[in-house]
Length: 147
Length: 147
DNA sequence: ACTAAAAACCACTAAAAACCACTTTTCTCC
DNA sequence: GGAGAAAAGTGGTTTTTAGTGGTTTTTAGT
Image 1 (cartoon, helix red, strand yellow):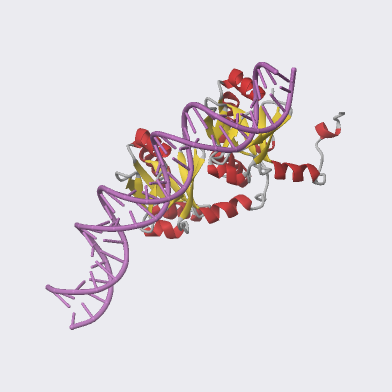
Image 2 (cartoon, protein in one colour; image 1 turned 90 degrees about the vertical axis):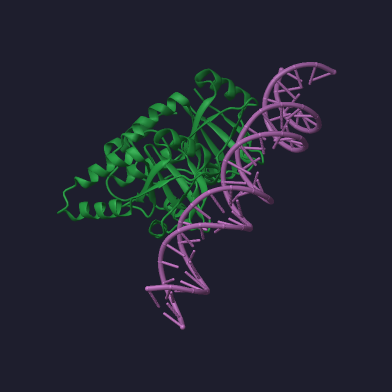
């Protein structure tokens, strides 16, 4: 399970050094073989261990693709999905298209989200955190929650 | 049960010495293994004994995550959640991202809140205390309360 | 004055960032 | 189409910074 967040930096070639602890966790769960793709709701990337991705991929592929929303999800998630392997220094090279999608520059934030990680440009992350509360109805499960 | 508040200081490396009494309480309840995460409504941190966190984490993970409000809570609470252990001197190192979120500098306030503690920058705590009453409707349970 | 806790300080280690050299691919221009 | 130049990718080393563990000094409480 991934939780917690880390500051990470991307070098001038677009390589990202995975923090040592996460590197270890990934080594255990998938031998360092991950899949990175686009998040459909926010301009950030999703990082999955190989098998987690395999399960998700099936679900996505099975979506009814005459529906526009489903088609959008398929195009983005499948279309950006890139399998990557950590190099000897624990780094991955992010493809240019993914860097563009998430507007990644030098300073990034890697955020644990249970079965996956999210990768954000620091600037976008900060503005998301500062954003106002989302509109819309609040599910009972949320109102009842007590931190 | 945690109540009462303490002034605490963070050293130049971002380490926080837990006051002796709380340290003892934590040793009893969780062997010094705690989880620190972000509060979603205020810029402060939440400090949970390990098992308290485990219960909360399940509730959070179970929220309906196609709902924007629920997703925000998940992202912040899970995304910042970091398990920490007190060192031989009763200190914990706060990750940079948590320090940033709660705008922690040298002087902090640690506030007991029953099953957890809140950790505030002294400056933010003081301005929160001085703030005007919040707007909005008051739940019955609050109106019925008699101090 | 004594004790305990907190704060400051110091030395060491590990990880991250920056840097550099080299290879491969892609593009451009002849 | 091929040569050369530029860009992109790869692998590794060095330097710097952050993390760790511990000790000493100061402060505060009894």
